[in-house]
Length: 180
Image 1 (spheres, rainbow, N blue to C red):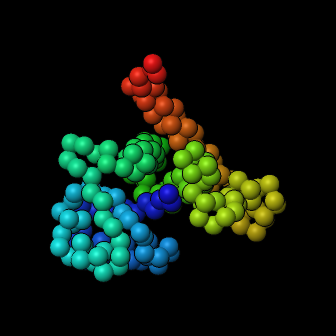
Image 2 (tube, rainbow, N blue to C red):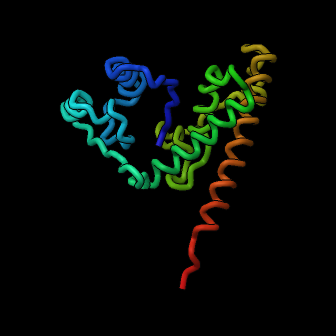
């Protein structure tokens, strides 16, 4: 499950969200088979439903007070929320400019559910990251400072992801009942 992190304001109207969706999702990956979303009025509107019916996309809505409709989606959302929260803590008011690095880190992290990183599952190969650039000597082409800065931020984001994963595991372990 590849993720795209797009800063979208609650004030955006449906036509603007539709344009963003077409530009950022459909043009890169094609039309999805299904989408899991909350029951925001923009996603339950007649227009949104008609658009996806015409595109052949199944819309699955989580239920109020029972958001576990799709466990994988809920786990993804929890991980992304933790990552974005950490991004705000680490980068302050400049958090939005770092979202591409958060997205990059998420999509290149191993996911046990798919036995690969989302990037690798999508493209069939491992992604070369800025961490590899320093090893390959390509930093001469892109500027040592940029490579160093990007690498530091990705390492920082990865540490935050690991901490979030550990917190989630601890929470799940506390709620898990022993097998009888």
